Amino acid sequence: MLTLASKLKRDDGLKGSRTAATASDSTRRVSVRDKLLVKEVAELEANLPYEGYYQGGKFQFETEVPDAYNMVPPKVKCLTKIWHPNITETGEICLSLLREHSIDGTGWAPTRTLKDVVWGLNSLFTDLLNFDDPLNIEAAEHHLRDKEDFRNKVDDYIKRYAR
Figure (cartoon, one colour):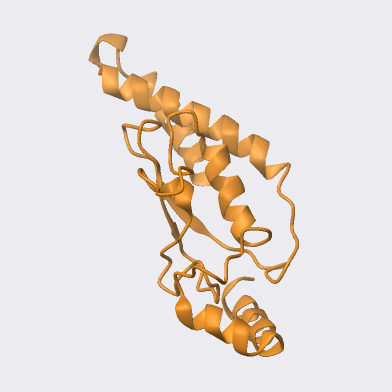
């Protein structure tokens, strides 16, 4: 997210070199969207709790916010290799609020914000850790078979990929 803040600073510098008449409406709309996202991220960075199996790990996520945000959800991928029942080793994430349409009614809605996405991702590391409906079946079965070995593998992944 620091990249987004840096981009905004660069964009603001470029705006001074061109006239207001040359800036398109979509550029102005994206700029407002980006500024809202920077504000939301700043609020989040101060308030994220850290606990559970994945405590101490630093996990990077790539978030693509489409032009139609917030009518459609952002696309999110985990860039850090992780041993998790709801995140594949290639970064796919199972989180209902990231779906445009969800069977359980908890999918994306225009009233949701990037803050909801980050809180949802954080919950995957704590209270929403779901072994009963996994995306990474191997990780979920590993946990059911041997919780201590599962914890050891999570710790190994954190040491190798999430520091």
